[in-house]
Structure formats: structure tokens, C-alpha cells
Image (tube, rainbow, N blue to C red; front, side):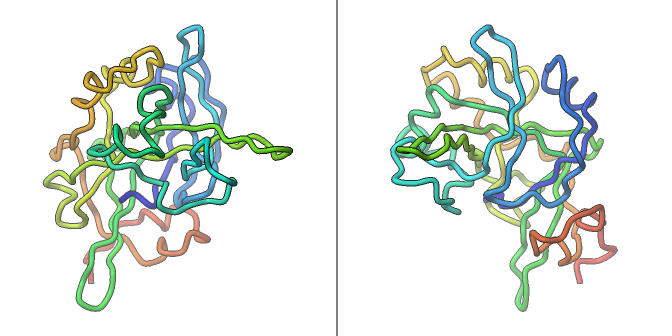
Length: 225
């Protein structure tokens, strides 16, 4: 699963990657955790793209309340079309979630070793995401999202068996198009990303606590011990 990630790229770099006219300046975030607001790009009715802040952890429209559910931070690509919590969003409400990298924890005999996984060229990434809108009687509207995951590629697999679906810029339009409801045309996009383009570097246990922030989270260790 993907339970933590970073977004530190500048607004101009994100605008170029995501095809946005304007991106608001955001403070770098090195340790984004579930239930926090995350940047997400969605298609507008006129065909443009817009970045909004959504709560990380999808809340289905039929949920009894907006209580965060850790199980909803990720959605397995293999079951999107079947699971009640995700199947409607898969057809109608898809988004891009920008990130500079994500964290996974490798199980060792006596502990879990965190790794920061990012592009070798340090460019930002775009995860495939789904979004939903929840509203209750007298409660404020909550917009939330989830990150789609797939089987790990050769770079990530030694650390964890799953990884986020990373989309190529040439696939953004298809993924975001709300009129495209035939999921058979979307399934080919939900594949592991090029392992040669990624690096997985061990980082300190400082990142383990979501209360910790700053560049120290992604600082590589000289050894995993």
C-alpha cells in the first residue's frame, strides 16, 4: 500500500507536468499522511484541469458519516470495477495526485526499514487517483480521494509488494476524461511503472511519525542498518 508520500516540487514544475494554467504556491510537504488534505487534479466541465485539496482517504457517497477509514487510502487496481466503494468513482470520478516520491517499509527481523521511492531524475510523479463527494444532513460537504495501487515493479518489490499506479503525461487526458466510462479502456493504464526510472533509498525512522516534517524525512541513509 501507499501510506505516506511527499510533494515538494515548485508550482511551475507541477503546472508543466499536470497541464495546468496556474498552480498555487504550496509549502513543501515531506510526510503527507492519511486524512490530511492532498493536492488533486480533476477535469472541469469545460475540459480544462483544476487542482483542489481533497481529504486523503475516500469516503463513499453512501457512507453513514465522514469518519476517516484507513482502508480507503488505497484502492487496488485489480478490483476497482467490482468494489462498491470504488466502482462508480472508477467510471466517473478520476483524478491525478502529484507527488515527488512515496514511502514504503521493508520488514526486517527486528524492525521495519523505511524507504523513499522517487524518480532518478528527481522530476515529480502523478499517481492515479479516484475522488468522491460526501454530504450529510446538516453536515459540510467532504471531498476525498484514494490512490490506486498495483503490483510492485522490480525496484519496489524488495521493499513492498504494492506500489502506486504512476501515470505517464500522455495518459492524463484519458484518465481524467469524465465522459470515458468504459473501464476496459482504463485498465491498461493501471500497470507497474518503469523500474529503471525509479530509485528506492533507505531513510531514517524519523519519517515513521506523521508528526515529523522537513527534508530529514527523505535524507538517504548510507546503509539500511
